[in-house]
Amino acid sequence: MEIVLENLTKKFPGRGRKNKKEVVAVDDFNFTIPDGKLVGLLGPSGCGKSTTLNMISGLLKPTSGKVLFGDKDVTNLPPEERGVGMVFQNYALYPHLTVEENIRFPLENFTGKDRLSKEEMRKRVEEAAKLVHIDELLERKPSELSGGQQQRVAIARALVKLPKVLLLDEPLSNLDARLRLQTREEIRRIQQETGITTIFVTHDQDEAMSISDLIVVMKDGELQQIDSPQKVYDDPANQFVAQFLGTPPINIFEGTIRDQKLYINEDAVLEASGLPDQDVVVAIRPEGFILDENGRMENELVRPEVSGRDISILFKNPAFKNDIARAIISSDDWTHIPHGKVRFDLKPHKVYLFQPEDGKR
Ligand code: ADP
Image (cartoon, rainbow, N blue to C red; front, side):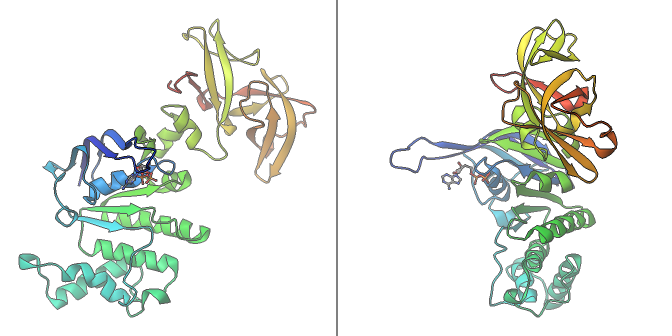
């Protein structure tokens, strides 16, 4: 099911006594989520991810704009008439019901021509349980399950209605690090096996990068970029996106373009043909540096940090905005040990230029 958001906006009235200013939680979103994709809504806390998800599910009514499922305008339909399955952060399982009863629960509410026989329900529950690999646990109560297993039950319960869209709100945030890795692969597998259009909310860029077909990057209720993970990383739309994605984070320098060359702290580090003279923000990925005794960019070595395959070179440069910058090079390239000064050349495709005032390119 393709999902289209048209001028979708949600405003909340100010809550505080003093702060009456309304909050624009989602500001004029226009984008299409293609059928059968796994899409991550990514951004810092409070940027409007859950609000967006809840307007897609029907739990929240937009202030203005539309939500379309395929050609159908569902903006005014309640959740149960949209054909969505939802999974929440806290799983929201019924503690007094067994796993089987929990998964079956949504089916019991089907009425009229949708009513299912006991046998049909049993089959559906079994299929959903198999899909998420918990068919051995049907007799247990939620309290007898690990966090990861509870999350699978919640996913099975969302899938048992055969929804056209699966929505997950921070599905991994209550799991420990190891289970989080495992469960995110599970979500990917389940999505690929069912082909169901799936949208999940996360503030964790690794999570979004590792399993999504498309990432929607948001900040302060505003859409920043919607693209494949690789494209968002390699071709960030603005400084915020460049800084939000990537671990270790991108390095930000003050730079100048003069006579078609990019200068960082008086070193002409790259050609900048066709660009007018101006001050720029220069964002360089840690893997964008080439260690070279004759490199064009001179810096002060702080120390190398060895971690097996790679070496991080921590360095200072007067044009670097924070304290210490980081270059990552392969340990194979660690052929000479610099003293005091360390020089780099730059890989042009790992260097992004933004305008200082608004962070736009
Ligand atoms: P996220 O999911 O990215 O953390 P939310 O969508 O929950 O962000 O919230 C976006 C903004 O809207 C925040 O500033 C939040 O405080 C505000 N907000 C969310 N829900 C409500 C509400 N029911 N009433 C008032 N403000 C809200």
